Each structure stands twice: as structure tokens, then as C-alpha cells.
Image (tube, rainbow, N blue to C red; front, side, top):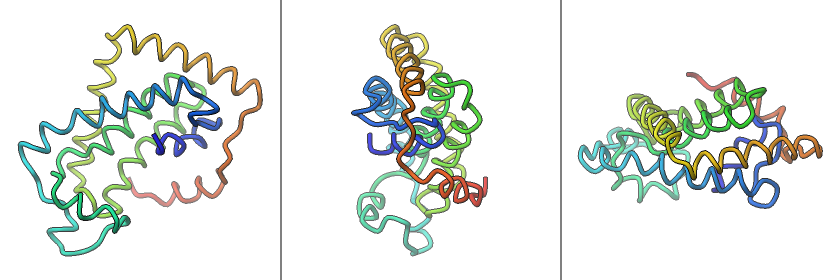
Length: 178
């Protein structure tokens, strides 16, 4: 997933399909599981998003037509971001604080960008955590997790660093309210 790279600075290692293929695949599968876990609630409640209620825009004008027809509660982005934070903290415990903070900010950006209500994000995080708990009973997930841990250790030993300006990201994330 494209958003996998948003965790590179927090991980301290570039995350991409090329540089960390096992971790990238694990994140793709988790996106499907965690993001998908929210659709029963979205479809059942079809909560209107804040930008629609207040007749305002979002940070992503290009996504607004889709978001107008997609239920707001619970937030799939928040579920995925929190699930990624939990899993990545397990992959690299030495950077758990940074990774969990990034996972929190990933979901919180949905409130800041007017795409979700705070309660949508809170519920999304619960769905993400429940998904990760459930995945820990799945042998395929555990195998992928072990491969990702080994891959990150090797990448760090090889000096694989994020390509992004992590100092600028750190400043931006410090301005996020949560």
C-alpha cells in the first residue's frame, strides 16, 4: 500500500515493496483486514461525514465524491493506521513509541482533514486493535510477522534509512492535536 511509506520515518527504515517486501506484503494484508473490518458498521449506520454536514471541503478534494457516499463510522483509515502502528511496534519494539505515535496521527489526520468525526476515529482504532488481536491466532499472519521482523533487522544492519525528510515530518506530527 502507498501509505506504508508513511511509517518509514517512525520505523527508522525505508518501507517499500522493493526494500522490505515481506513487511510491505504484511501491511497490504493488514490493510485489507483492518480496513475491511469497518464496512459492516459503515453500511449499517451510513453516518454522514462532517464535511458534508458542514458543507465544507477536505484535504483531498479528489476523494470527496467517493467519501460522500461512504459511511463515516467507523473510520477504515483509522483502523488500518492503528493496526499498522500495533504491528510495526511488534516488528521493531525499539521504535514502538514512534510507531504507535505515527499510527495515532494517521487516524487523527482524518479529523483534521474533515473526513471523519472524532468518534469515527476512536471506533476505527478499536476495530484495528480487534483485528490485530484476531490476526494473532492466524498461523499465516504469524509467519509473515516473523519474516517482517527478520527483514527489518537485516535492513537496519544494512543501513537502510528512510528517503523522507524525517525531521520535517517530526515537526509536522508534533503539531497534530490528539
